Length: 171
Image 1 (spheres, one colour):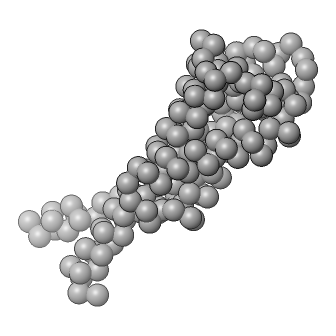
Image 2 (cartoon, rainbow, N blue to C red; image 1 turned 90 degrees about the horizontal axis):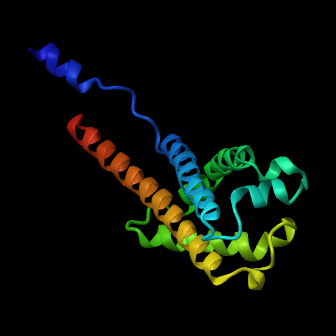
Image 3 (cartoon, rainbow, N blue to C red; image 1 turned 90 degrees about the vertical axis):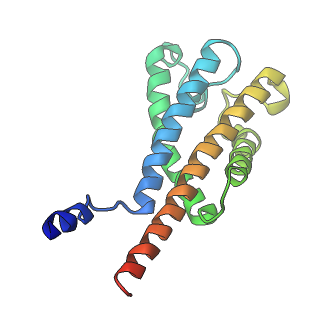
């Protein structure tokens, strides 16, 4: 019976918070950029990930296809890992959804105000419709809440669990 209890305590190796942050960033980038592609398809937004990634640099027919959208969603998901690490290194100890919402809004501002000159296929901010402003801002805020809340939750869970393990072992 004592062996069974010992085996129950031996669970799968715990992943680090940084590893979970990378997975969260990838999942968040995949989910929210796919929703952004859907918003573009249904004309809620004038821009999509493919507008940024492919249409800004190549003026070919294939950049307007579904393949370009799928590839750009995957690229955004990979880039989102880096964004998740920015959140991890700066705001992981903050609790609640507000740090993530602010992070998403700041990220939206960086993309649409700072990085727009790098992407010639994207019209200037004032040339975009208010539907695009609202839709993309909401997507970025939701992305920030998803990534931020997930990372901070894992961080606090990991530290709380680590503290309880050290207290049980008498360390």
